[in-house]
Image (cartoon, rainbow, N blue to C red; front, top):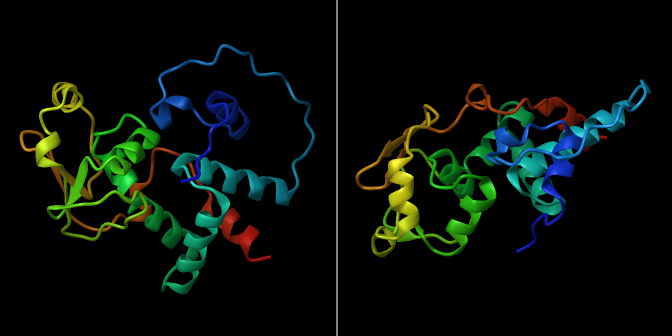
Length: 198
């Protein structure tokens, strides 16, 4: 499994992301240097937007391009379809349910077999959930200290397309996500579509 292992705070500064939006609580110790007023080219803006989305969802180029290709074959707007596919990933759903503080932590929880979908253990972070799926913590893992701590700290607002049961540590996918549901990070998906359609 390939993943980004470089400096996270530096990448956040480069892409203009707030680390708190990604679930990272550390504050940057470096000051941002003033970089003149040089106008960015269209290609530069498109590339930066693609890199931002890849970084937020923890994907590398080959997998991200695969999501774009799949979205372009679907009916509807390609950029919105791509974001909806990314939101449906199991590691993202685990993060949205609040079981992982970051998407990277949620991905590791899925990889280590702590999560079930409809009663079956799924250890593939890219598994796409469907409406009506039940995402839960595996029965024999429910007594681990990490889940007890998660129960006590559950005061986050969950997106409207998911439902959470704190006592049983289960979540339900009420409906597929829509583009309007992705509001935590500002994404201009049309720039990514323009970049790939060249």
